[in-house]
Length: 331
Image (tube, rainbow, N blue to C red; front, side, top):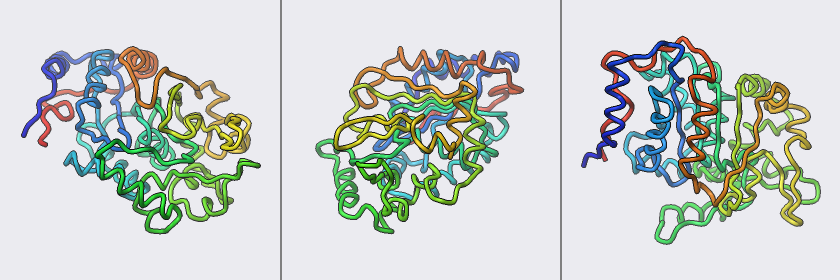
């Protein structure tokens, strides 16, 4: 079965190819990484890409995926080694026929896709230079509870059951995705538990929380021009929702310790303070529950952070007979 993207997208593509703009007016390619339980070929995700192109004509949109088969890509949001996945995405982008020629990128991450893009910046920043990163409802400081599954979503229910049974087990930490950004803390001190520091396969490393620090992480993240973090006001899926701002929330009394009051910022473990001091760290809120996003908010993001006006690049955009990503998707 074939699914065609909207005619408006294809018409926009043909116009882009036929009438290339000057290099300085071309927006950077946009990387979009979806969240848990979604897939790169989903209609909703492609509608976001369509809106990005309507707002900033000529935007080359790449929907990050772990598998070309949509169902397998969805499975990879639950089952997989996050570090290996990020390494794969880095290689996919650097070997891509169009993206490999781009001078830099903008990036948009939804839910867990946000912290994975942030990890891509930290671990692959020299190969995939991202200029502006926007995340919505992401779990940058981890989660204290696993999300609820929709009725009838047995894939989700099965994996969540395994997660709850043995979060710190070696197999779970290397195979089940949400476990790799689960965080256990001491409510009295806010400090991460020893079990988390010893066994976390992803988050403890990418947040540089262990004694041995990776200085490259801070260097790469500080190179961003803007890091924009959106939290949903009524988010009940991400617990705690303030994780989207790198904040710590005390589970006992609900008090919130902002990132600027935390050691990850004060000691600049990953470059947040350096980024903040140059005016590149932004904390935003949007109405509604988790991933309840309207076109108005997205259009604002595309206009403010991803337009060609945000910088001048030696980038001709998509030219010749190259085709916009995923004109036709085989499902």
